[in-house]
Length: 172
Image (cartoon, rainbow, N blue to C red; front, side, top):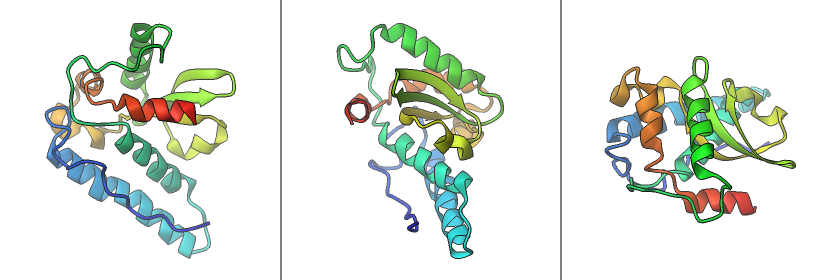
């Protein structure tokens, strides 16, 4: 297995303001995400594989890519979802109710699309599904901006989803 590298954000640290602050993005990318990458590489050097760190890095890379600067009325392409409002409510509920820390995920499976929660991302590889839209609801992703108001963070996330990237993942 090859070592991982810390990938640059596809936008400036302050590009997601006011939804996610520059400070959060700097800490989240440069400390938390970089920590997953570095700890995976250290484990690899020691002859071990750390699925927790590997999957943490992978999930963050999907997360960075599925965001863009905020837009009001940010909607997916026509026809992406049979009932967008129903999907939005289901995904938001999954994000708000993750026990402890984790992720809300829209999965592409052999049977179609599914919304779920991933509390421990070290289990990512066990389900055989591909994450196409993810929302990090670990406290490091929002606490400086939203304190313990995860619900507001989730509500604002809809303004920064990069639907073109999500649509591309659905097609692949």
